Every structure is written in C-alpha cells, then in structure tokens.
Length: 307
Image (cartoon, rainbow, N blue to C red):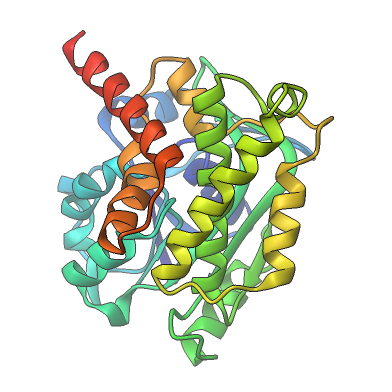
C-alpha cells in the first residue's frame, strides 16, 4: 500500500518515520525548504525509546503523477486549504484519506471536496516538536493514532488499515466510535487551550490561583454544551475522566495553541476556538468565556498580520 504523508513536521514526520522504519512504502509531501533539509541531514527522530535517522522519500505537489492508496493528513488546520490543493492529484478512486487534524470542521471540508466515502475519522495523541535543526523530539512516551469508519462500521478496508499501521513502534487503535473520540479530543484540547490562553499560564499555575478551578470548569461546561448541541452523544465516564485529567493541580499542562501563541507562531484559532463560538451562536448557546478567548485570539492574529 502506497502511503502519502502530508507534512514532515513533528507529527507527520514522527508517525511517517515510524512507518517507513518498519518497511511501509511511505512518501512525504513537503515544501522545497524542508525537502532540502531532509536531503542533507535525513529525517532524524529523537524518540522516547531512542534516536534513529532515515533517508525519506519526498516529493512536491507538482511531482505527484499517480494516486496513493492512503493519504495521512497531518498539517495544522489552517493549512488545510493548501493541503487539499496539493493532494488532489494523489486522490484516486480507491484512495483513503486519514486526517489527524484538530477540531471537526475539516471533516466536512474534506467530504465536500473528495466525497464522504474516502474520508476516515482519525486523531492522534503525541507530545512532539521540531528543534532548530529540524529534528523531531518526542517529549513523552505518548504516541497514538486512532482511526475508524465515521459511521462506526467494522469494514474490510478499516481492518486492512489497522493491519498496515500495526507493529510500527507507536500505539495504533481501531475505533468503532471514532466520531465520539474526535468530539472528546476537541473537548479536551479546546478547554486546555482556552484556559491557558485566557490565564497566560499552565494548568498548575491556574489551579493554584484563587478561582482557577472555577474558571477551568466553567470553560469545560461551555465546550461540552456546544459539542453536545452539535451531536456528540455524551459518554459520562469519558467526560468525568477528561475533567479529572485537566484538574490535576500538581501537573503543569499547556496546549500546543498556547505554546504557539507564546512563541509568536500562527495558531489554530479558527478551528479550535472560533468554530466552537460559531456553533454556539448557531444553537443560541451563551459562551462568554469562549467568546473572550476568541476575541483575544483574533486580536493576536490581526497584530501578527500587521507586523
């Protein structure tokens, strides 16, 4: 099975490298600068279990000449429009698209563009980054890809994908409730992103501040109300576990969105927070805290664009 990994950053580079290391036929779709860097130094992965280097197959969008069997989308959500243009020549009649982007809006966009039968549900969980040399640093043992048919069916093709992704050095999980999993990841990451951005600190600092626990729980309730109105079927045990995970006063956690903002990078504001506010307005739900975060992020984006 020919696999096209879109992006060779800290997420796509990590999972794609693990797949290639185990003999899977992986090609990375990358920009010219990243291709040159990988050509000179290889794809270096400082994994939790040890460092390895490989010489990856790379190509530019203009070099795609035939469809791929599987396209793994690992770009930031704000890069989806360009990614769609890039991968269009790689999508054939039997191509499967596995997106592991944040939020939910990308699913509708991909289905409208390529057809719902080609788009799987998916998410990933990993703590990783790129260092100044373009090497991938895995910052904890967490490295999971979760995937499934969006209608929850146990299909032949999803079983084949499960087999393809098995035994490649990361945790792979076939889910028959992938849309619930995706809603729940959005619940976690949007709450974490909103509370850390609004407070300008990690969860340990927030929870040791007077009223910090009240703020976190209030944001959590707003997010939960929105996604429930949009079709999420609540799983009480998961909801309780997620809030408990976020509420550990001695465990400092930040979101990637907060870290990106702190470093002056582009952020997934529209996809993680903005889309929640849009959906809340659609259902006439009051979300004053999410709206405050959304205004904050819009100001940041406008300031960044004017620099």
